[in-house]
Image (cartoon, rainbow, N blue to C red):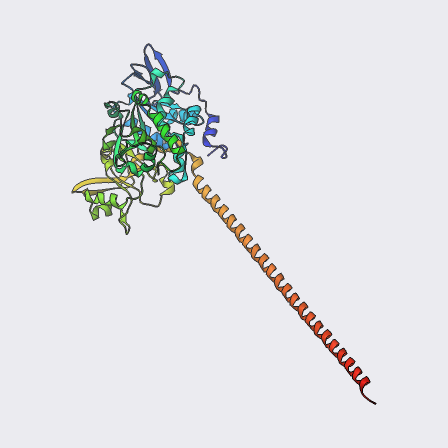
Length: 512
């Protein structure tokens, strides 16, 4: 890329961009109505009318939030684009993207250029970000990934605060309902369906997930020691990749404060309160089951996983997959019943596709270019869509019904052009992992060489000391031998002298 490669891409971009007067989204007050001025994708401006206040009071606007500090915008762009395209009335959609103050101006411009027909508000606040960071404690013993300690993993619990802190928003304009989605998702359903959901007094709505229970994450022995006894360890968890938040109810029940209290308990506890997660466990504890259950179609997950465990593999066999069908999907078994790649069936009718796992569609060519990719049942909406192309496609029979499967990554790729994918990509991260590995290898080699040098030096020193000791021992032995010889000579001389004296005395005493 042109420019100073030693600087992050967004810094280079900022130099060349004029962030004022570039046709970014403008708010124009007309009586009691608000208009969003955007673009229709063909260079013409268009207006989307709201009958009430911007960001609140109106049931016509659907507010969708995403949170990330990842400079690579491809995932977020696909999540936003898919939600917009699959909406029955895209003009109702308002997206809120929460990120860092450093990245916010860059993202505003990138969204303006590459998602120009979509209303997107970018929010950032350093003080709130610092506050969130201050509540987070990371422990290696928790088995959680370090990346999950980012404040933007916890930002979904503060969406209403970020929107409220926006300079153009007053407290009464914060929307009553906010839909949160993870950035690694594709929205195949109409989010208006969620927006119109009767919350029945619950602070939020989420999808129940009963393949895991609360005690899979949380150490209830420690929880009970803290005095909390009103929890069911065997209760199903809920997936936090999609949340429908009733803002007034959420704030009145102080859910965010309860989450922070659990974070304090975690920080102050000598033992880990939970394992394998960072933001999910305190949210589950704060909610304690007080959420509206959404249908499973809003949580079709595991599209980014590369393998299935024995129990998961058994489940798809029991649901109609025979040997021929799995062979057509390129599935391989190991000696314990694990299979590769992951096979996803819920994608046929799923309204939210979640690419949780290591095989991220925007990164797979870097890390999984030589492996079989996860296979997804083709979404119903794409079956008759001639504009969508798939690099791999096959049809198998499940209980005699023909079902077409494609690479899961190709479903994601259908929502982003090559031009946008290139522009929104963070090239600074392209070689980061390799550079770290190579640097670590160099450091390891240097340490090994230094260790070997020290060992060799120590061995040489030991040999030198040993040789010196042996030489000294030989010299001592020689000296002792010489001393013994000298003593022997002296003794012999004394004995000879004594013999002479005796002979002399005898000669004197003998008669002539």
